[in-house]
Length: 242
Image (cartoon, rainbow, N blue to C red; front, side):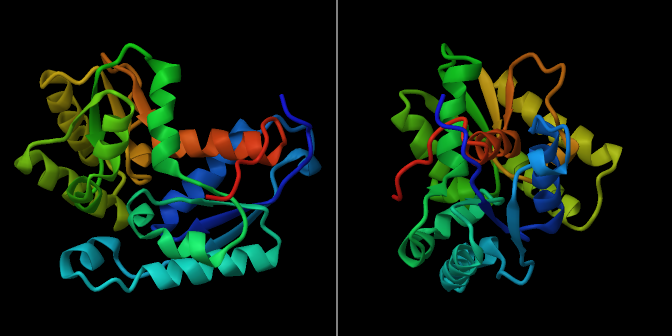
């Protein structure tokens, strides 16, 4: 346990807005608080005008990185002492974030893969539910490989189905059919041999909790929210700047 000194978190958000609000709600729910003053100080830049990450990957026109770097600078200037970003896909574009700020950045992908050790250390095959850009750039697969495990992603048809469902959530559809669609893709990964699943897109946990599934489901939003509380409340020390 580190010294309990409150830290201010800068939340890089808006990608999308519902996922950012969901993250903030989870931080609040995870905080042991008896009054307002016990809660985590969050400075939130909820900027939905950040260009589409999927389009940037497909086109090769990186109009995302500089915008994320500017966001990181704004949050640091506003008083943030560490940064989190509520979008897995945007982590493909984080070089400018590291270059533009002097405070630690907590990587949702690294944290989610490390969580496997806590949830099911003996898991060998990890099913990944993530966007096309995440899958195609292998950000999760490479991190899982480095952990000594094997990554498993949906087949082409299920990956497209998953992407359509993520876009439906972004458009405001949180209905039962979206949840059932997510569950069907998740079940297909389990049938293909996954010992554990990662919901590697912050839209997914809005409709799919994984409760009652035959294998554990790690929600990247939950992992980042818990890590944020631990760091902000001083339960663990801030990491060094990468």
